[in-house]
Length: 326
Image 1 (cartoon, one colour):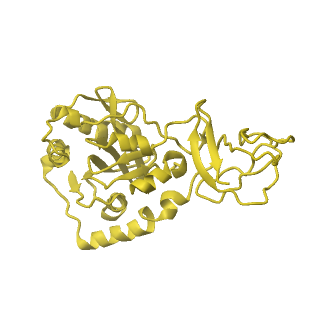
Image 2 (tube, rainbow, N blue to C red):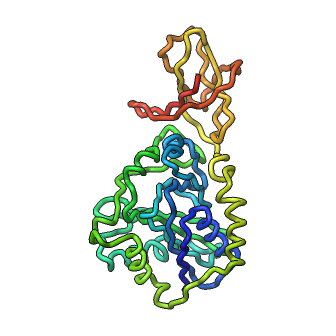
């Protein structure tokens, strides 16, 4: 086994490093990677940035949006969050779930137990401590290599996580995947106040199977140049991070001026909104909300003016709503 400890805190570079180790180095032995990132939201491959993140709040807080190549939900990470990665050879008969459970989550869970944290593996891809979720995992495959990775909320800013990430909402259906921020917590409470995140990483590294073989990998300058190229082309590219999105159905709304009887949301942005909003043959009161589902057989016509999304939110009834700028 090998272990790579990435010193940079640029999430885009480190996601590129994962992919480069998979497809560039092509080592036959398992590779563990440990790293951290500056404050950012990490999106799953099939997620919609605007639906997962309060983009305005993220911009004001200086929080980057970075999309990984694996699936799974959106997470908030900062320098007190530890990212862990395991890269393995993969064949068509390999069981990805078994790899996630036995080769990735298993060693991480056992390492944390040895370090004194009361952790347990639950469901398909989550690790809990004291009833709170402290880690989730995701995977992707490139040819004959599989990357399984996750995040450990050591002393992550939970308040920022709650402010930026949107809760799960059953109104969105299709390939677009929503996150669930149920009962998250941090590991810090199980360690002494003096136990910094750096000390936590050192302890974790000592408990990983790779440490017993003492085979650290140092990336060369040539390796880092290739990683930088991949970073610029993909993981630091706005088109990759927020510019594209899978199709989905939704329930949308806006407050309608009294003189308007119908409209259409034909939005040019990262979310591929359906182009119809439900037709009304009668004039509407200024405060009336117009809603509908994209799967309905709606009557519609195009508006004579452009429409720009102001914000997306979930109202008190649980309905997913879109507000358009005037």
